[in-house]
Image 1 (tube, one colour):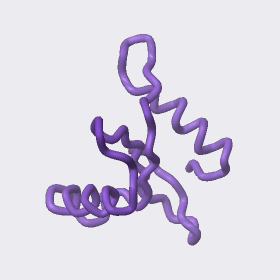
Image 2 (image 1 turned 90 degrees about the vertical axis):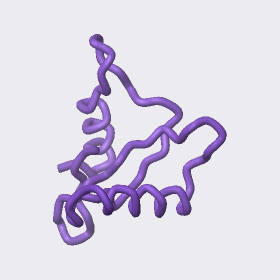
Image 3 (image 1 turned 90 degrees about the horizontal axis):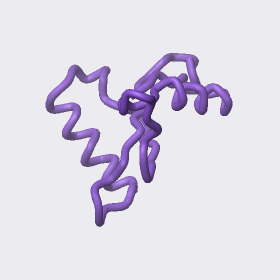
Image 4 (image 1 turned 60 degrees about the vertical axis):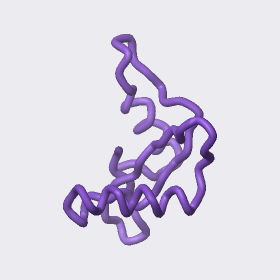
Length: 80
């Protein structure tokens, strides 16, 4: 998850999700994920937006390259 600004200029979580095989990203799946996260984290930590991906970018160590995702949001004017 990364921070993304909402219309009011507040930073809120945005999740980049690779759906399980046989599932597609949808509003229904987003609702399921929000409910699951709200049961396990503080209410303000659930993602407000979901970005569906086929794969997440990886760095040279095999970890998710959050910098690339952050740069992509910044290029769209949505990153904090």
